[in-house]
Amino acid sequence: MDLTHRFSVPTGVAEAWDAFNDLEGLAPCFPGATITSVDGDEFSGSVKIKLGPISLMYNGSGRYIERNDADRRVVIEARGKDKRGNGTATATVTASFAESGAQTDVEVLTDLVITGKPAQFGRGVISDVSDKLLDQFVSCVSGRFADGLGADGLGAAGLGAAGLGAAGLGAVGAEPSASPVGAASTAPPRDEADTEQTIELEAVPAEEVPAEEVAATAAAAVAADSPTEFPSARQASPAYSAAPQQDSGESTLNVLSTVGPVLLKRYGPALAVVGLLIFVLIKIIRRKS
Amino acid sequence: MIPAAFDYKAPTSLDEALQLLADGGDDAKIIAGGQSLLPVLKLRLAAPELLIDLAKIGSLRGVRDDGDAIIIGAMTPHFEVVGDQLVAEHASLIAKCVATVADPQVRHRGTYGGACAHADPASDIPASALALDAEFVIAGPGGERRVAATDFFQDLFTTAVGADEILVEVRVPKYTGWGSAYEKFVRVAQQWAIAGVATTVRTEGDTIAEARIALTNMGQTPIRARTAEQALAGVAAQPDAVAEALSSIADGTEPPTDINGDPEYRRHLVSILGRRAVLAAARS
Image (cartoon, rainbow over all chains, first blue to last red; front, side):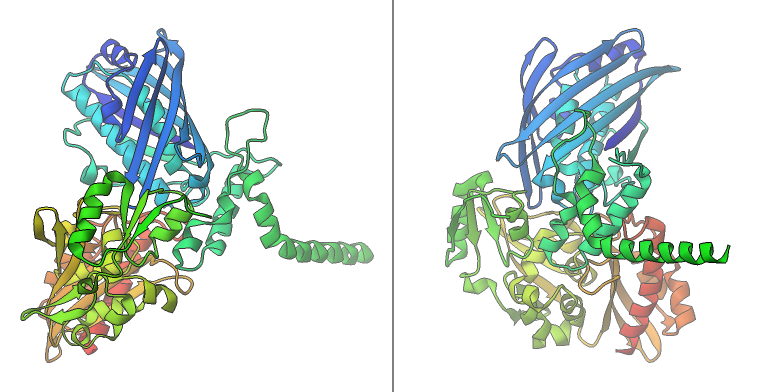
């Protein structure tokens, strides 16, 4: 799952660049994130997500895997593991900077991969949660820049995003495009910068099925799977039982391998009927010709 | 699907429960009917060390008359609320909203206060409290305080109840003689509301004199449609007139996008549901 955040900060590009390369500091911007140690390009810390009944603690570490001064691009990779051993989350955060007059446009791309139980939480609730947390983070970051307190780092963002992994998967499947949630209503004050956010679904299907189709079918499966108001049914949609990563180590969520068996079970009989129909039609057509 | 191990305490007094909560800190969690919390525990989305069950605190259960208001104890199960005489007489909207919640099993375990404290934006119950300008009585280490419904529902799953506090009762002003209706749109029975409109109106003859409207699942919290309420005052209880008065019902909402529909769809839904609800309330 990719999360994209764009915002502008009222500083020069060099200053913004320096700020994002300074590790410690931004942790307070991400709700619940703490950086416990920094060693060169590596850091470790924790993210605590608490929202209503949900309470998760991710411990993890991260590092800068790219710092491109020329292109003004940093790539941070962070991995988190839930305290109770329920799942893991990894995030690759790519932040790029572009000068735009007196301002700097910042784009933060977050690629999230989640495994484990949190991934099963359905009905888009979790994507609402991740939206909210990321909104708060972006507002805080842009607010700090607006105040000229640029001496912060993005370490927390990476780790925070990893923690968000917990929150993220609701969007995969259930909501290919999550709603831009009300940043305005909940964001910390000083939200002077322009923030804009889109969430897209990216899936690597195991076979030649267009990603959109997989997503749509997965969504349909969820719709069919959680028709009741039982909280358990709503949250425990089997479509999201996390499958181990199977592809060539590529860090993408393999939607089809996860939901494939479910889809097959659900639509198998229908497919068989359709197949039979096609077979009969072909027979008829051949006979006619 | 097995929760992490936790301790379980079922105190018999509110003071005892508050003390346990204070001692337990972050690792303690209040459980009411458990219809939302237990699934969360089973998925291990939360793993509290201690569950404090309020079921044995008798004073939290039941509905009683308090002069100009009725008081619904936080631990009153839904089925009791639905069948209660005081609720039927003075706050019939609450009974109508609660009656649509899930199924009989859930309604026998789930509680009015628990559902309010959970604050799920798709839940039918918060809208009933918001529409009627209910007050929430919250007990904490420093005593009791009252919070208006507009301030109580703060965000997704977030209410004014602090970590060391317990929701004790919901105080609902009397709307004696007002008609009410709850229109909830679902594609299949017992689904969470895709959108819902809770309304209660006071009529004079065939004219709507006053109206209260709250919307379910049209934002991160239940939302009052105040502009529409004002527009309804003095309007004839006829479909066209009501529809026109409700043209602004979805203003200021930020409905979610999910597999059931996008914001535009939901805004359209509440305009239709609103008309049905207001007309039904005016005729009830």
